[in-house]
Length: 50
Image 1 (cartoon, helix red, strand yellow):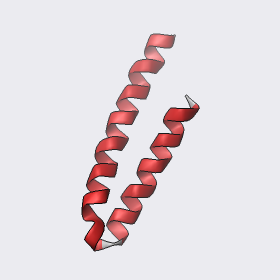
Image 2 (cartoon, rainbow, N blue to C red; image 1 turned 45 degrees about the horizontal axis):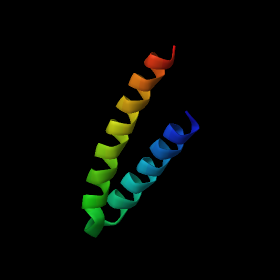
Image 3 (cartoon, rainbow, N blue to C red; image 1 turned 30 degrees about the vertical axis):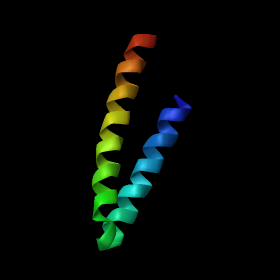
Image 4 (cartoon, rainbow, N blue to C red; image 1 turned 90 degrees about the horizontal axis):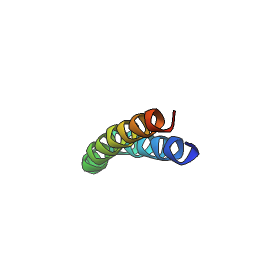
């Protein structure tokens, strides 16, 4: 679970950097997509473990 939380934090950082620097808007989009995918993976895996 620590790995998933670490990845979520990393994706949020990428989104913030992407929106801060307009030239890196693609980085924000990739960060949002990866954040959602990681969150879904964590939710599915969390339910399977219980």
